[in-house]
Length: 192
Length: 160
Image (tube, rainbow over all chains, first blue to last red):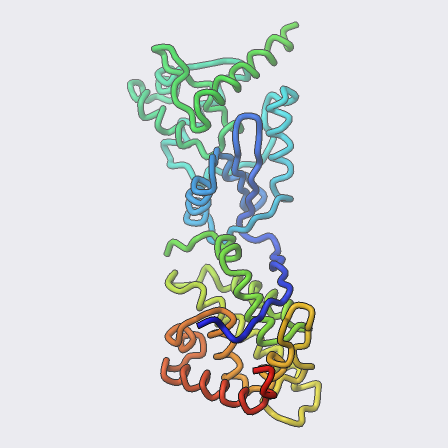
């Protein structure tokens, strides 16, 4: 039975204030990024190829930080601008308050170890494992980097397999190669 | 409790909440009621203990907000007929093909109006309506049928 109550008023979506977590989707030359911040700190900068990946990431943020997660671009403006600057070779390091809420203690240790590898440089999973006193844990280091919640900002793309090849990357191998090429070009500019 | 990101609730249910708010509070207060409902829902969300029936939870809040607006209006506007919405009945003819019908719905007692709006505007079944109105499915059926009976008497033959 069709409803006798035809009812089609003009509807406006609600306008909600910024809450515990704000997020924004940011399409870039290396892929579709999902950025999220909480309390003024960036907690997520991850590749979200589609809305399913986006949902999974946001559920992780909701569980780890707060379920009050809303789409708001303004709190991510600085991060998005710096990502764009970085991807066009105008920025070599990120200057953003970050929080590794989404990383395990081991992951934090691995991600902290990334700081030794400067813009345009490369290292290997094995070397990074040794540098953080986990010699032999190259595979675990690779896994920890694969779940990096702050891609680009914490440069996990600078870590490669010692056996050669490009290795894994959350944004796909093409994105990893593009980032390494970008940094190599930026470095040669610097040297000139 | 793993609650989904609040934005998912907004994206999935904002139209239902807005439609119910408009049906219960009319065109002049509908947007306000919907907005208030979302603000209240956001505030209460982390304390929620079950993710079952989030839609009914949102519609319950919407109905409560509509009742608050109604009470506030009653305090400031003298009402000759208790139980009627104090504001002008729904008459946004541009959007509503049958304004006289919704004017008549606005004249029903609140629980009948809410039951009819939940059934025909947000397509809830009697179990869900009972949940929102905090009553039994049998009472929900009765509220809807009483409301419909009143509407049949109120409305002129051709607009039924």
